[in-house]
Image (tube, rainbow, N blue to C red; front, side, top):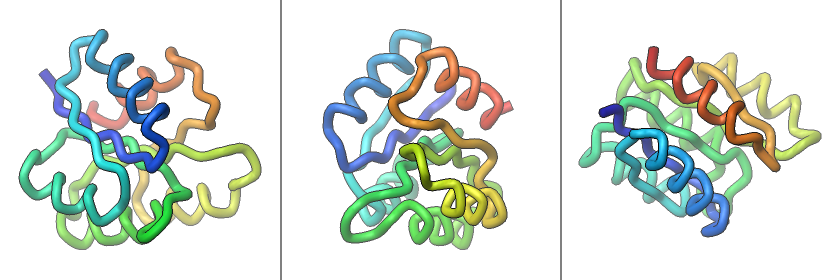
Length: 118
């Protein structure tokens, strides 16, 4: 069973993603911001990370850079709102493998996670 870390400052989005992934056979952990994500990543050692771009304290791009510095093989898909194309492009150049646009479609999230961990 693949382990996925869901990182989003919005509790509703984390819960929605977590339920979707758990219902589809994934083992899921959650983090509310970038700093928590980095700590959880060290302990949980996920197969993939769904990472929100816009968060307080430490945004998704900074978190992505930190995760890749810590683990060059980190598998990350960004979660973004409409209108954040430049940030998505930056994330993909930095090493993100895919992205999902909010409000997300369940099939698109599952496809991104499967692509990320394959």
